[in-house]
Image (cartoon, rainbow over the protein chains, first blue to last red):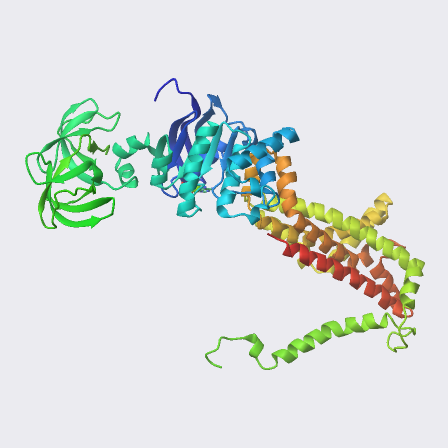
Length: 367
Length: 267
Ligand SMILES: Nc1ncnc2c1ncn2[C@@H]1O[C@H](COP(=O)(O)OP(=O)(O)OP(=O)(O)O)[C@@H](O)[C@H]1O
Ligand SMILES: [Mg+2]
């Protein structure tokens, strides 16, 4: 949102329709997003929401049905993929099977017409960057999945693109390797200073790695923001539901002041709530609100507790404990509290307990 | 028995029938090969081992002439046919599916279905008109005819290879600054190469032993090995024919073996 940050990729009102007539698929529907230089930007969304399609449009493998894509302010519609300073790490890696690891990594530079010596030096640098020096002369069919992933990454980074597109590069890896590669990707991004556009359908991956996240659903971008913003202040039900666990309640809006409002909870008590950006709903309206399970604490019912419910069960998770409560209007409410050394007031199932909301815990959704 | 799955191998008489088939297939060929080494001049009475008929065939100028012509035609025709088949295979697998794609497949493979004699007669008529109007009756016509019927044979292995090749490799090359031409040279061509070689060899073998079309199309004095042999059969039959046949067989076996190993090397 800072204007002094330069925009690397500007997607402006882009739509992509596959096919025509009744079987037309609206893979992207009027998508606009400005991705900044040096940013680790993540496209997050369920399968089939159009993530790969958007990357393919940026890389130039496909053309938008409507809208424009600009790179550093310049319209790149007329540029074929081989003239765009954008490289891709493919979902299936797409390593050249008839070339060695080193030849794969050097391919882009070679095609750019760089002298042999420069290519060799760059390949060497990339091999150390992804810690693959020992395997430089292996055939790509003779290395493991994680190693192939690194080669694909090195191959895409070697020509020093302005923007690197990564299409679910970690989805084929097992959990441990995945965690390692997440850290490695973050390190590579900060070391190279290249803008990363990273695609995933794993919300945890998106939250831990990104500078900003765009949450997509059915060809639309629903919300763009920092991991904190989309997690703490989801603007739509889909976003709140897709990212993390959450409690949905219905409340009535009272006073609206700027970006916050007072709402009346189902219990009849008032609470401060954040409004989704850019909305000015009228007081008196019924709205959906979300409260994250970890943004509340449990206490004995008193005038300080905003909601009360009957404790149904308690699940111990080591670092924290989940409490399932049934509110007066029969909705389920989940609270999550960290376990401490000294232990806290323990609650027994069946007990009537109160819920204390932390500051900023209540978020109003755009309906 | 009843609860076992159906297995053709256990049917009564299966082994016998299979054996008879193999004997019928290979007994004549083995006889032919054996008698090519006959010392006598009969193709049915064994008179001892000798390589005299190989020597005779080797020194026979007519055989030499026909053999060279056969090789020239087969090499040229397989080269042209493979080039065309490669382009056809690229056009039918490396483009977006278009209307008439199935029709195109059918058109390319149709010569496999048309009886050879029909093609031969058709070519005879066309070439007769051509020869009359232009006065040209050189080997080019024979090469052209062979190229035509070799295309589908070259096309099949090349297309099979391309279909097994992931398009994303070419996309990746384009992403890495390779122009369409460089993508073709550095990625598509090296990967489809085994298919091209296999197609070329198949075309070569098919061209080498063609009789029917050659017999109809050739101008006077343009004997190839098979038509020469056919001509000889009308005169005296000596083991020389066996020797030539055995040599052709050896070349074919060599080709098919190479074809097999190239195909096995598929990723
Ligand atoms: N070439 C195409 N022709 C027709 N429809 C397509 C084509 N490519 C994608 N689609 C459709 O567009 C929609 C978006 O596809 P896309 O591949 O972008 O999804 P995605 O978000 O990358 O999903 P995933 O997480 O499964 O990879 C899907 O409904 C898909 O079926
Ligand atoms: Mg995808």
